[in-house]
Image (tube, rainbow, N blue to C red; front, side, top):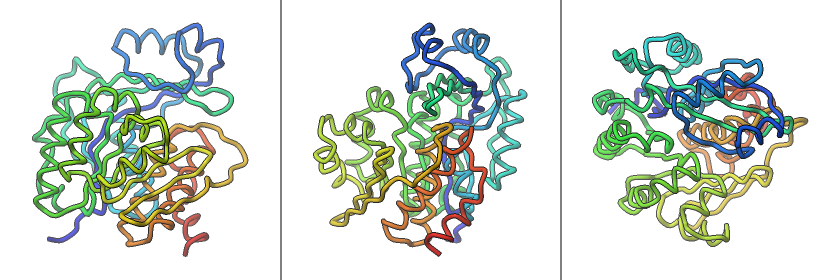
Length: 331
């Protein structure tokens, strides 16, 4: 079968609203610094009204990954649900403008708006994320079409979207299609709370051989393994997938595939401005390296370069030419 895409992804179609904050405001709103949580429509309205001056930048974990992958030269397509509203138009415009195919029909029901993530960024760059899923949680299974899935080298699934029933069924449908076509399937577990809610499901996906590449940070690896020691957790999870990729913040990243283990340090950066999207862009660099046939170390290095670029500015989409940055390092 002809490869139409290098990477397609199913994920939340979200517009991020970012604003600066301080620890006093987080405490007053009972928001643990650096946390990620789902909120309802009323809380979204309340918190938005209390935030400082914000800036709107399209986001969504898997969509951020595709944006980075597209800048790196990959052919990408996205499946996600927006509503017929202003933020839906913003999201659709932004992802297409970055060279990602996006043809999921707009949700006809106008009572549920496009998803938004209210991100409070502290002075040290830490982000406290509050997500209202809105229309994203109603992605129907029939939005996943076989030609698109079967025509992609890699299918990326976003763990955040495993929570709502309809998108979960959409992702299960995509897994069946990708498996039938012999394609690679990657999963980003997204957050510790996703693992808390769906650990048994995620482990079953691994044990059933439905996931080839697993992306997680160090805390998520620990939660998935149910252990307190990182090395032991890696040893427990790595044999269940073809490739385990674990990011460790300032301590770099590790990838394990069969008997091979590779590690890289974090890329040096003058100042961390906003850590939103760091893991997403790391996945972008790694996956593009993977579809290019590069080794684990090069894939990790590409991920580290992309992550360092995105945390040097506001927002979770790349602004610099990360393809040029990778070429200068790796050729």
